[in-house]
Image (tube, rainbow over all chains, first blue to last red):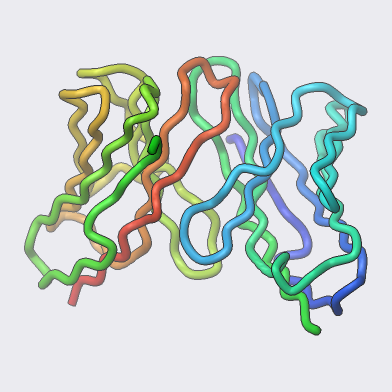
Length: 111
Length: 113
């Protein structure tokens, strides 16, 4: 059965800290790994990773995929209170459009 | 202004009543999805559709039904057979083929008492 596991499930840090969120997956016919940020309602897309070892960056956020070890990390440097959210990791499949989501990591950044 | 709309934002129903949640997109996406999110949990797939007039069950389809008569619209009916319908429901769409990210609507919070 396909599954995506995230750790930690929740995290509290102070502004300015650097955090690393982990995602491991077991997805048959794996195509890509996706990261989303969910603040209150709709998740918003952050990254899609298809190739191993190539870091994707967007401002203070970066992510990398290891297809051999079946995991991905999302790094956030110099955290701000606006980074407080649930971060969802998901694996997509080549065979059809289904995406398997992990439980999310709830990040709280305190001033 | 392209995007996905869901209505209503909040919905209250009595037990035993069917209720339909609306989802419309003007992104010209082929694929559409319905997810359920419970407190502290990730997204669980209810139904998805890759093309008009075709849809597949997700992981938790029991007690739900959908239709896809138009490309833009993918309504979800929560039937009285769904044992625990109170939840946050999210609709999403994507370009087809599995290689594209999903775009999400704002969600509908359904409360059944």
